[in-house]
Amino acid sequence: MIGTCMRFSKPEKGLEYTDWGLHFCSNIDENFKKGLNGFHAPIVDIGTPNNKKGLETLKNIVDNHDNADYLTIHLHNGKEPEYNTLLENVSELNEYSKEKNITLCIENLRNGFSSKPENIINVAEETGCRITFDIGHTPYENRMNCIDLFSDKIYNVHTYEKECDKIGHVAPKDLTNLKPVLDGLLDVGCDFWLIELMNVEEIISTKNMLNKYLEFHK
Image (cartoon, rainbow, N blue to C red; front, top):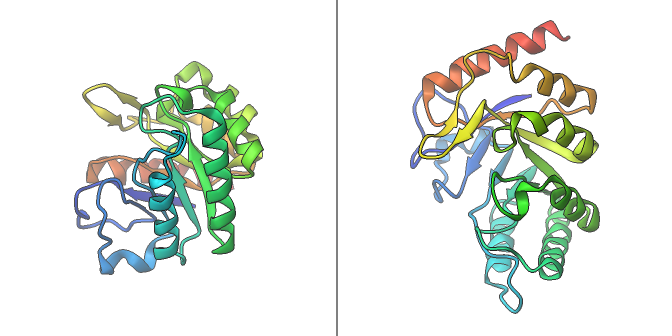
């Protein structure tokens, strides 16, 4: 399935959203609720000992969106997490999410603890959660290695060309760089691709390219 991430301060017209970014817009527009599959949580601290505020925030999201299929979270807010605390909190949140039939996913980032693929897979394996693989957060030369490492732990994918400082998410002009990655994702059984861009025309263009790719690979 190809979906669209809502990554605006308010929904743009002409789009249907699959994933709602609560870190961009905390209030969900009633007109878009029906088409949503899941959510991206606000970015909170779940890696500091004796601090349960971030965990409680995420549990509250699970409680308020128990009709969702999945919830994607960041493992840290920029600070280096204390590993055992992080594992404890992710494990607790994963079990809590399971009770609501929500799949908890952790996302790889460009910098810090979550930029290291071995940290992501270790947390996923230790806690039982799944992975949201963000292609644009991963250097070109490491993308295939990440797919091999994450494998069937990948639940969904943030799909765009790359992320750049001061620019943000860059749309693909074509699928030259993405095609090997998309091939690899299909090989591990993941075809749940979420377009994570902040420009309506770029979202539509990327969606058309991905649809054509999948048509060819049927």
